[in-house]
Amino acid sequence: MSAMTFVWLSVLLVCVHADCQWQFGNSCYQLLTGKMTFDEALQACSAMGAGLVVPNSQNENQFIWQMMKNHLPSDGRVWIGCTNKHTEGQWMYAADTGKECKFIDWAPNEPNGQDYGGEDCAQMLDGKAGKWIDIGCSAVAPVICEYYSSLEMTCLQADADGRFA
Ligand SMILES: [Ca+2]
Ligand SMILES: [Ca+2]
Image (cartoon, rainbow, N blue to C red; front, side):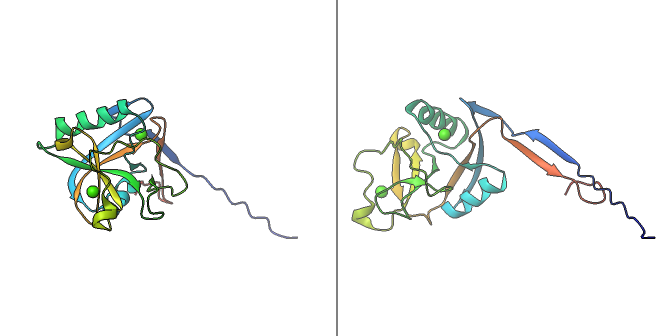
């Protein structure tokens, strides 16, 4: 007679809506006022289950600029989640190198990274009416993370003791 073993597995998942203090269309945004490099900004947003903000229209760009003006000291700036560090001259989503940033809102005389070299990242500047500049990725600036869908959930999984880490 062979013994039979039953193994009961139970997985407890709790899902919550992403923090949606600021919403535009289907997106939610979260402002991180601490200054970070581009790579640090990417990591910070990714750790929250979000991406670095990518304005996809003039209206969304205006919304982000307004958010920045209302919550950062004047003449502020934030990172934009587009980079050309993978393909020079081609601006792609930093979190997904296969996706092109189709909406671009350069300030006059930008991008000028070809002139100065190494300006592979982008920022939105209050001082340039919410328009963008290309800039070195090791510069530091506050960060706006974007949940690309407000329906995205953050899920927490309980450990073996039923606790949430
Ligand atoms: Ca967007
Ligand atoms: Ca530039």
